[in-house]
Length: 110
Image 1: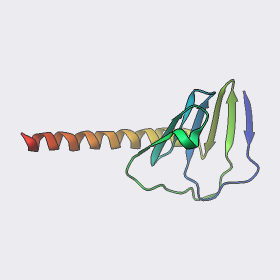
Image 2: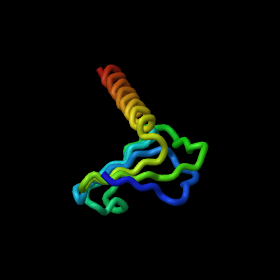
Image 3: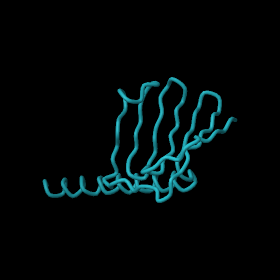
Image 4: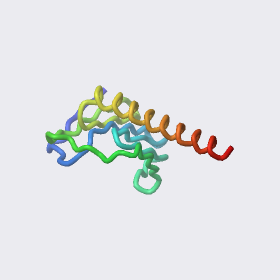
């Protein structure tokens, strides 16, 4: 396992955890949305799932940290112990709300 930290802090960024699995693809988990892509080329093959909330910017500038585990590269901005549960809970809440809206629409149609 190899760790490194970027030299300059990043400003006006939302907390995030990014995982790239070699040439297979990756995902970028944030509290307001999820990005995922296939292959190494993130810019052209990226898909975005929005949770319907505007991004919240970190109050203090943070340095992006990197962890390399073989072909897996993990980078994060902000504490991943906070970012991952926060992002997953907001994503699940968003899915649950969409499901409730679909049920209401079906009930109205009947």
